Image 1 (cartoon, rainbow, N blue to C red):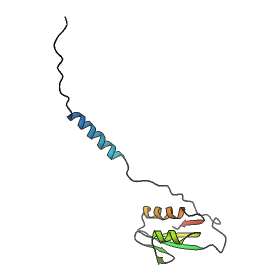
Image 2 (image 1 turned 90 degrees about the horizontal axis):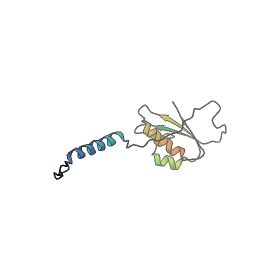
Image 3 (image 1 turned 180 degrees about the vertical axis):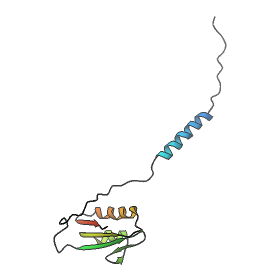
Image 4 (image 1 turned 135 degrees about the vertical axis):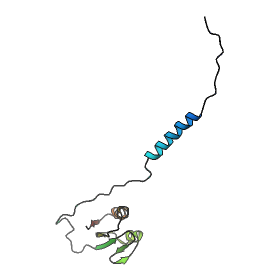
Length: 121
């Protein structure tokens, strides 16, 4: 015997589907990263590894959270990028210097060929 009852189609409940989509959206938002990470190549300064020529132009940069000086004169990152072309750059860090500020400076210096950048401890 076959059941000849009509198939009754029930309306689809969207509430559980919306809950699942919301949970997935929340999961992906919380696990994703919105900041970019960059790599800066650092090398150790070894004795005798510096430039031996006496005519190399040297610059002294003091870097702090709010302060940036080039050879004792206040400046900005854009001015440093325009001023320093070749030579040796010594970077002294203040106690309040953030890692992001140092990375910004080193990124500008790395873009220049012929620069020897040393970060002092």
